[in-house]
Image 1 (spheres, rainbow, N blue to C red):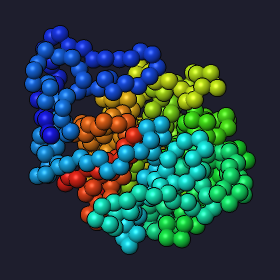
Image 2: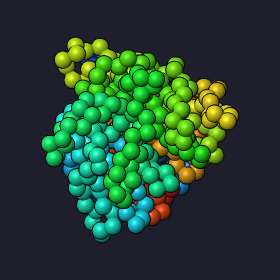
Image 3: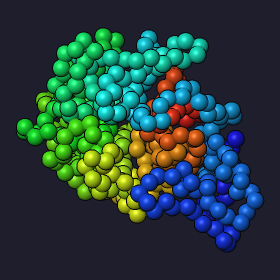
Length: 380
């Protein structure tokens, strides 16, 4: 169902209140649509699949027959990350089940009339893939796992966090980056590839927070890596926990989300090693990209969006420049300037998203407890 909100609900009738757990947890009640308000029509918002805030642009995005369909039920205790669509002839989505001790990735085959899901193991196996992008026939992975692990054949695989390249057809993996002058990266989280093949990636502390790697020794930061030379350059250090990253279609703007509302304040034996504080950063920033011979550098930092719910994690830029972010129990669709156009509501916590399909007009949602598919008119 679709509900349209008048003037962004900028004025609500009294009394109104929105739940906040205030105990470091994340609650599905802490969302706009669960606001207690003296207006019977708000029940339409609460029950809507798509909440439209800008009718002109929002209804264009949805098209005539938008839908949200639960495709797979998955374990609620597993974070599902790093979905990457590989176009035909493979026509599949490779993704990660991010959890201590879980080695294989997953693959969703889209060639059949009814998609199927199965385990996917690369050669060699890779542990704790957290972000990914497809570029010129290669899947680039941001990998957060930093512990030795045992492969299915009994061999011990040594691995540190870094940037890896997967040939999706042969499943062969190559390590591209695993250190900064001998220092181990924290846990590369998400990445984006520009037209020249340079990789922008974020390096927060979530790998340690989920017990996937050792204690961090670097401050959270955003980096640029050039695979052709092996050079890695730090380009942004002001965000508390940089997370999702995307590049505008013209390559002139880089978007980075800050999920610093997660506070690393728990005893080290409690996993995850962080709690949630809604007063912390849960922002999306835009940066101008100025390109020199060494690569792109960031200027003109500006906040453009405070997440309505939790914070934007998995992040993509659509073909028309709209921003799409996985945030809490749903997905935000924003203009390039941070205007909320549509909110998709789900029954499960969404970790990441991926455009897929022959025309890239499917948006797949990956989370804790479910994998869903949106069909609409927005092209990735």
